[in-house]
Length: 57
Image 1: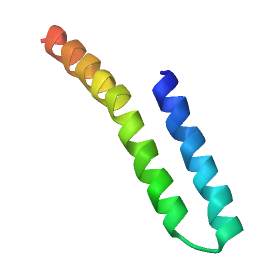
Image 2: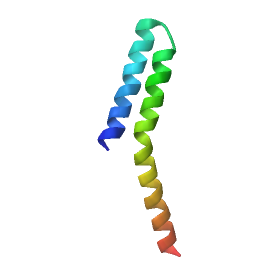
Image 3: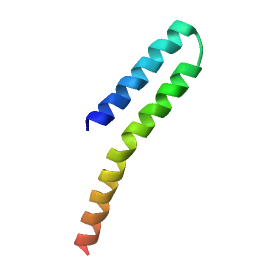
Image 4: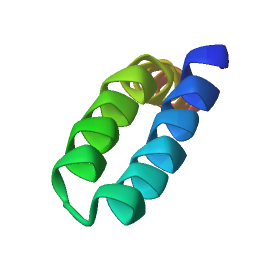
């Protein structure tokens, strides 16, 4: 979970830097970092969903 919040922080940082530098490059870089940091959480939630779905059968 801390990595997810760190990723959200990168996205906010990218938004601030985008406004400061008047460029889309900082937002693109920070958004991709945020996406990579949230991937483990998404994988874990997907595994839980699949396990619960298999146990229902």
